[in-house]
Image (cartoon, rainbow, N blue to C red):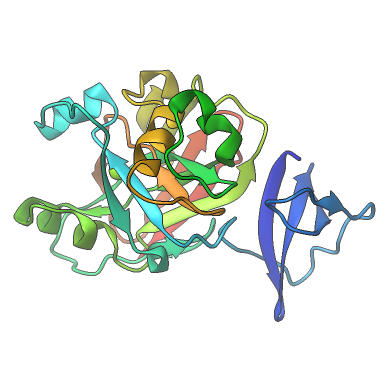
Length: 251
Ligand code: MG
């Protein structure tokens, strides 16, 4: 497998492998040992969905030293995580909606881990075999609410606050990838996943000591420095090396 997406045509929702702009429908369980149709499927009338429909979204905070510094927060000694509502997801091309026009709402580009197998209490050295792949995400954040509360679920769970996708890359080393945000074509965030304080395997291990992770669950790994506010009409693009770009607009 390589880039796997989830698509909809009418009432039909299906997974497919994406190769050079062509889609090859998947047969069987996407998290099992699927095969693919030999002929590409017709693209007319297709919608791209988020690449998975997770039971939960976990988000890790302050996982790049430079972003912790710009937030004025000390580095956490263990991964700091919270839950985002799965109903906050939107796919590539979806619109981020700002709920309160007078609040500061920020973009946060993040590498997302997609879980592939049920896992509980796994060691970091064994975590990779439970990971299905990686995709791009935004952890959109209402800073006014985030600053006024001691936990961040509400600030980060509004509908449309988790753009995800477009596809899951199943064959990629997640730990040396450039990660960038472009806002209306301007470079705003520019880092590398080799700067992660807790790497993807550390995070999966740590979260799995707290809760069972299920196939399709998403873990956002934190954002680098350069976060900033969004406004209506903006075009946001997350570019992570080796992954298809994630593009969303704001209204
Ligand atoms: Mg974040």
